[in-house]
Length: 164
Image (cartoon, rainbow, N blue to C red; front, side, top):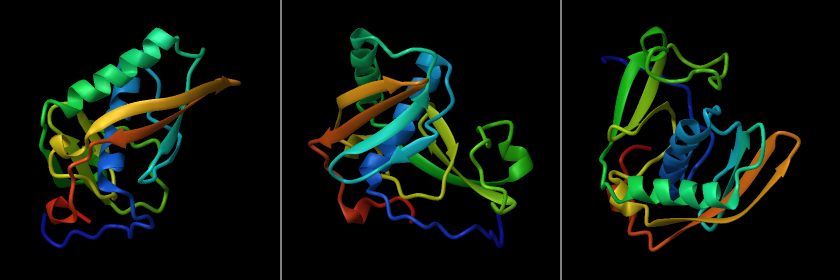
């Protein structure tokens, strides 16, 4: 697309963790049919994400979330960036979290054949750079399941940044 105009991004995420969050979100959508995280705090050392669920996942389900996210990381999927008009993106991605002031052209981040998301953040070039996804703790209160996670053995370096 020529002359793409996007909103400025106000955060500087740690690309491996941010990309892992995309995989986690898609895993939660597929396993529980819930929306993507409504509240996430993504940091280098550990992160957290909240999901709207009818009940708390069992310990077996928590281990399955972790297993599935790591399975996607191990697929060594490339991360691609594309641009499209909001009306075209609506059939591909969930735009419910998009702020009203978002630009007409959206930046779509695609991770292999697993996830597509409108996102202005930074990401690794390939999931092989993420490392191992580990769920640390989790709790459930009034329809909100909060989980805290970290990454181990990340191989990402700033020279492999896909997009700022």
